Amino acid sequence: MIKEMTRFVVILGLVTALSAGALALVNQITDPIIQARSQDALTGAVTVVLPGSQDGLILTHDQNEGIAYFAGFRNPDTTGLIGYAYRSSAKGYSSTIQTLVGVDSAGSILAIQVLSQQETPGLGTRCQEIRRSETEPWWQAQFRGKRISEIAVDKDNGIIRSITGATITSRAITDGIRKQVQGLLPVWNTETIEQASVKSRSRS
Image (tube, rainbow, N blue to C red):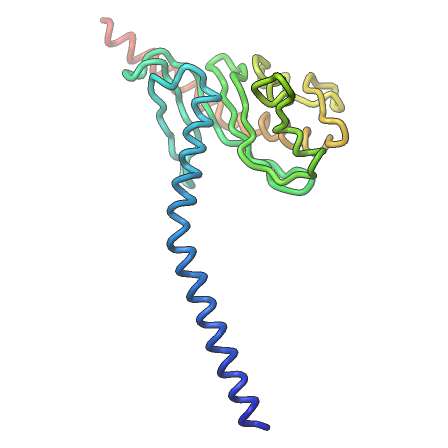
């Protein structure tokens, strides 16, 4: 009986070790592919929220843990500033929602794009819904041209219409966009001033 138990434990241990090794190998192979695809998707999204940057230049700015924001220009020589893009993360009803936001130097939203979410199907997922005959998600389109200071859902006396049955999702994305930019605006203002100074010196 003891021998059988020992044999069973040894076999179970071997199976567990082999399974763990196989999973590690698969992860090692697929992780770079996943990361590359994710980076491609992010690059494409940046050009969407910073319209006009496709043929110009997009600079990435790192702050401690990864990319903090992007700066988009119409021209490759960093002239013609379009604005800035940043990633907003907020806890929705059933998932963490990742959103990319484009803002011009005056503090108005150029566009937003929800990058990932796992909200309730038919409710919160409508934040990415594209209606028939339209080319972009109707809910996200509401943000275009709005100033950051104006952003709040209608349930909070704001101007962004909440998704029916998904107020938590709507509020999470909206509040996340507004709060995240508060820490970045001073950085952007300083950067804009420095760029203006450089241009002034180059003309003198």
